Image (tube, rainbow, N blue to C red; front, side, top):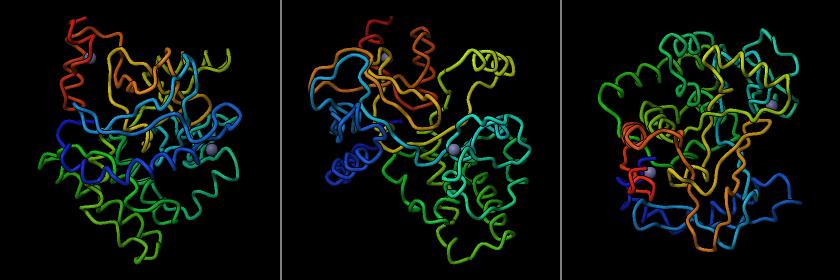
Length: 313
Ligand SMILES: [Zn+2]
Ligand SMILES: [Zn+2]
């Protein structure tokens, strides 16, 4: 989400973007009784950081502004036997031995033709990588026709070093050979070039959300305490289109939460006036000024000038 660098190219894309995004969002809504579609937001260019999301009417504290399904999601490798491979919902049977377990028929149908991912997953496990897993999942969805190969093009990419690019070439080759070994039709894999892989990974690296499900029961509380001891409280990672357009603030007026699966819920933290920009916090807001500045600069490539940072709070 290094939003400063790419402003000019954003202006070019911007005209058609707003309409298509808001249209998509209304179809993301899953609970029409609480938030009539379209949601009370609009995407506009900001003075300081490319595009942002603004309130199109007054929004009350606690209001569910909209929900968003992920463009792509993947479980953490340590959670792969305990959550749905497709939507990251916790499985009732917590100890499946299959590397792909599903919570329901609909989720299973999203992953029709299966390849043997053991070497790709093992590579990621050994290298401690999570984002190539999202690229793998996205490639599967493109091949199955669930999404188009350019679905993430609207997001801003990270600028990659030549080291990163050469590592990606290796990963792209491993991904491609896994599909080939599983007899996927080669014309369906035509999109899977090194350039596609690098472009998608560069976007995923700064736009992925770490998914932690809200604690719903005492049993979950106990298991999440155990998970924290294992230093792994996230069920997985996911990338969204519209939620990635929210800019950052160290004192945000909206937050994103996940209740039972990877569907993101965007909620107002306080009363918001019409025309006000909606901002989320990309990092742990409880950190001090210096730590926040450092992490935002290293992880997202910008210097935060929110009111809290200006007063060095
Ligand atoms: Zn599921
Ligand atoms: Zn700040």
